[in-house]
Length: 91
Image 1 (cartoon, rainbow, N blue to C red):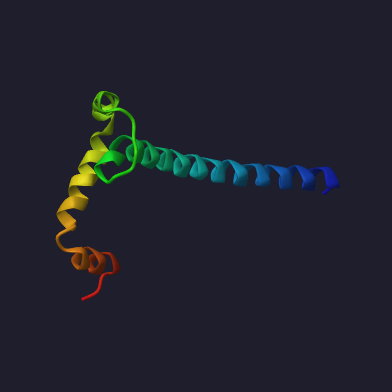
Image 2: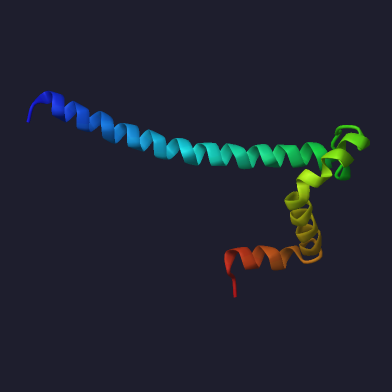
């Protein structure tokens, strides 16, 4: 095997690794941008300054998943220890 083939295989393997990690980084960044969007839009409910109310109402249809998560968290707020113990599977 020549050095050219070895280098070609090395670069091919490195390229596959970079592509695989790039997808996971892009998915992580997408989730973080969704979180920031939700915080900016619904931040007024917890005291953060946010956009004007009419703009928040216009953006509300795009936030269906965030509203469902917010409702689930509000239900769990009555029993925070139960949520914590269910996360860590404490019996």
